[in-house]
Length: 453
Image 1 (cartoon, rainbow, N blue to C red):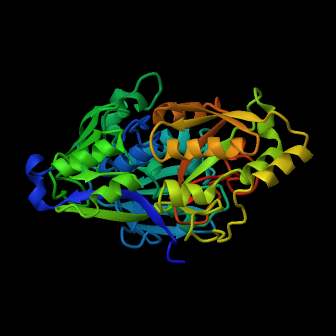
Image 2 (image 1 turned 90 degrees about the horizontal axis):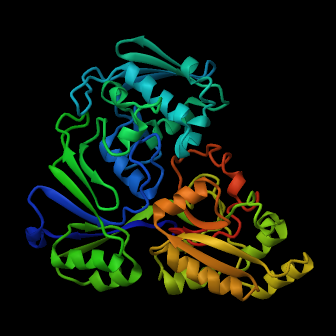
Image 3 (image 1 turned 180 degrees about the horizontal axis):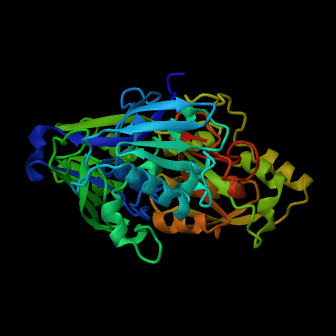
């Protein structure tokens, strides 16, 4: 029970004595950025983009940093809920401004939610939980006065659930006056916001060079106060060993997602502090049941066999060395409704028996995977363990953005993906996902995540 949650980010922060090599008043972060598809909050849905967006944008309400189950006002000054009418009346902070200097208006909130739902990008399903759709969103949002608006929803959810949904990154508020002039072909400024920012967060975008670096500059007028650090440079360093070297040399202040070997090498280094951060991250194996090129993926017997072909202990203990743990449930450990039991183990003989009974022969599939730890490590383990059950797995390693694109276009046969719960409320968010799930049970042949599903 002591391993309820394991690290999402393994950070190595240098002490003041080692900061000499990095610029003053600047935080230099080394991590992988190859998964980023967009930094538009209406589209951002990858790990690196979700890590960046909250520095650039704010929501009406957000989870409390020290108690994530508690929702606190950020751009909202207050709200009044009417459960029977399914409405929230939001009063905005009257002095809140965007980084551009433009004041926050009800029109900005309406524009932000309308564009997020209408664009219907990857994270739109979160707002769809409220019943918001492109054909009805205009009727759900109403300006009351210069600092007040009313939000209505059609789904049978409580105001508490609605507030939790509005605390997620896709509900970030953008500056309409800055974004609208940059719109092209009815894209609500989506193409422009992939590379620029128009928010009220602690930072604003100075430069973004895809697959190279993100440079953030302090927003002194942020409604929550000016940040203490003037600028942040996030470098794309795909190789964890190179990140470790940058930390040791003093060329970076923080390194994200260091592997077990890198952590062990830094553990006792003078001037280096290793932080282990709890997370609800889960990595899982997903089969595309709609892939007509491989009908095997739509066979429940194959799903059942797959559960017994994952070397759960080998991955968590030997390969990932305790950085992840086994959790065979859809909801992350520690959240309401999460199952605590792990009924599946590595048993290739049992898997073979299931396949034989179903008459499945020459089983095979391709596996899309990000070409970086821990994903490629997990994939190589799966390739070996599935082979012991007579199933051939061909790996298709690629950059994170390419894997995301293939999976979202449903061009994959199978993939190892990452999922982080966007709220702590037990909302029905998994509902839009079944097209690529392997069966109705939680993440059926799932493998490792920070919990290893």
